[in-house]
Amino acid sequence: MNDHEVRANSAAVTSARLLHLTDLHLFADADGELRGVNSLASLTAVCRAFLDSGYEADAALVTGDLIQDDSREAYVRCREALQALDLPIQLCPGNHDVRDLMRSELGVPGFEYCATLDAGSWTVVSIDSCVSGRAGGRIGDEEYERLRHLLATAANKHVLICLHHPPVELGSRWLDSVGLDDGDRLIDLAAESGNVRGMLFGHAHQVFDETVRGIRLMCTPSTCRQFKPGSDDFAVDDLPPAYRILELQDDGSIETNIHWVSHA
Image (spheres, rainbow, N blue to C red):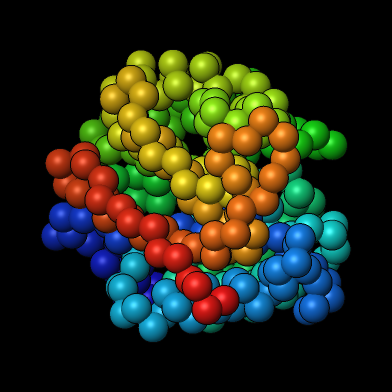
């Protein structure tokens, strides 16, 4: 157990401090680019900017699309880049991920796949929202039952749910067509549980922060290329890579900020 884990599990802790990264889109080739952006160089710059900021996080949350080219080597590059953070890392898959390869190459100490993190008065739960061969997502019955059980056993804690797909429409026609098919079902379960305070996701490559039925829904931009908000058809944005930091407070509130990395 390292210092970060000690802080996150200490009964004296009144807040949990987290880093959120999403949509890394790495390639086996270190020079691989996603729509004109070298995704490995961009991720490296984002991690460096976070480390240089001096922010003392307890853990990192990474919500899918770690790779782009279906290769084992891309996951190796991902593992090496994220290990530089020296943080416990909680992962869930995205529609571009290959689950078996992801579990294999990131099944090493320091990484947890679709796991839970107990941090102070919070439980952070990562779930799988992906359907093989589809860009859009759906949470199957088995995953819902797992989540339902976790919410029930975390009844005395605040809960943050992490997943890849947005559970609500974002106002972009093409993106909303590949969102979470059963987002309403997820929102219903979370609201009925009474202890879910927030959901954290990616997939949309843009900022989103709204409260629905008392649950704060937050999307973080990609560590590489961004999509243009509000567009009917696919369109990229010129905004730089980014990461999000969160402080989960003992009273159930969430303090959070997006940090853009313009020099990536």
